Image 1 (cartoon, rainbow, N blue to C red):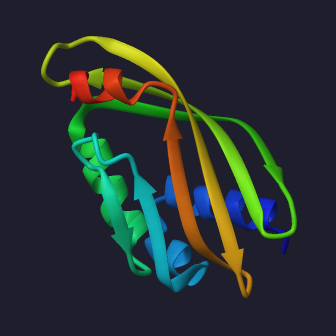
Image 2 (tube, one colour):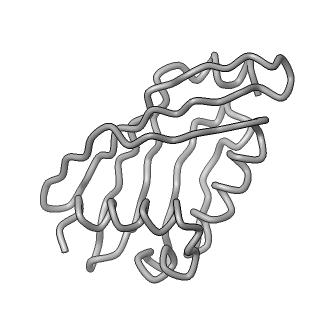
Image 3 (cartoon, rainbow, N blue to C red):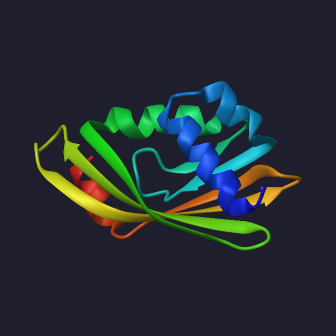
Length: 127
């Protein structure tokens, strides 16, 4: 499986809330990096990191929707481009961010995920 195929499969299983499936595709020392300025920021580690982070991210918003826009990959990394639409619990404002999530694969497993929002200041202000 290529990194692009692997990342697509991880996200398909996450959308289905198939956390056992996500963990089966994740390296035991998976690291997910979110911007430190966000309420769910920092480094999330372990096979269950994706589930725990998803719970934290989606729990931050009154409503959140993710749309996959594109996917590109090489021999080690793949990047998924997403449209993330959120409704703030604090202000009620609905807004959209473009998010690029870069995943690195090792031994066929997701080893590292680096998440890049277009405007982390806006996300933090609405959270």
